[in-house]
Image (cartoon, rainbow, N blue to C red; front, top):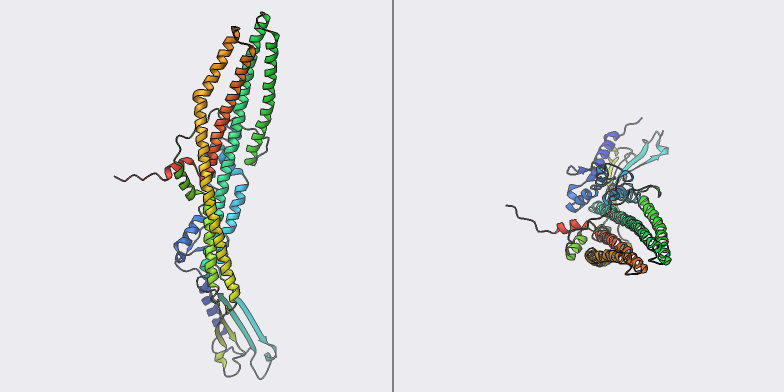
Length: 484
């Protein structure tokens, strides 16, 4: 085989590969992401690095959820009494909607190393077949190695856009968590309400049977008509009918809770607690709105998407500048004869960004999308403020109603039943008045438990509106104490 010239071809190609590999390698100042395996550039700006750090805070399995489940000594179905905290932990651990959103976030996070990477280099070869075996010329061939290098700043902007989209997807996960927490609490309080209604129904049946015995005794003594006994039987039948309806409602409530936990709808559940503890003191509504503006995941996700659109606009401006393609090769055809030193070649190619209309269109599109997202953000802020105000006023209403029932309405209703029972025993009032007093007490007790459930349901709605617990909102803006 003939000599390749003064510069060895293998050494030239090795030098080319090393130099191009150095162009695409991570700079010494970059860190390797431990869980993802892609570089985090320290020199890309603090905002980009913070996006990467934020994107790693949420593991594929929520650590807070796992810890909450591990702290429960028994599964929900084996507990003596169902608690709302245990139910929320189970729903977050089992509901399939959360892994679905986490997978979407992970897919968005995986775009970062793709958009920050250079295109694959290209390798080309050409041969002059007639030169092989020729006695007049050397064998002619050319080998070319090329690497496209985008205009400075394009890769960084693409990475920032991908990180902003990943952060938005992470906030979507947090938004799903908030929604699941609200759904679990609403289901729990529905379950609590029907359990209390069944208890009131059983106590009403017991009291009605006592009334019937009293009416039967008075009838046998000739002090009351048989109609009192028949009226008691009618009321007992109506109360039993109500029990059938409540049993159906309870089964539906159990099925709803089990569905949220991704369990069989007929899975048995422990009973809820007989009493619920209300929140002690609400923060001012202005503080709740401020907390919501900082905490709401959907608001943060929309802000991240606006940041992604702004990077798209910056990238659209960079498209007016050309990309370069570095080329190196060895062309033996040009080096045939005494000009062998011309065989090694190095060059640069670049595109000519003369299609201005297409690039102007991309800029206008990016600006329009930013305007659209900003208008959407303004609308979401207005909606957020209204939702917080509405939920806050509803919660205050429930507080006042519960105080009325506890201090005034229920004590008076119970005293009314006792007075009617005593009056009927002495023959001072008809049996119908006793039945009416009892019926009124049952309705008022039901309404009291319904008001209690409404209070906690409205509290759950308020927490969803602000994006976190009410207690955290009350503590978030407290003035810091000066260190002594």
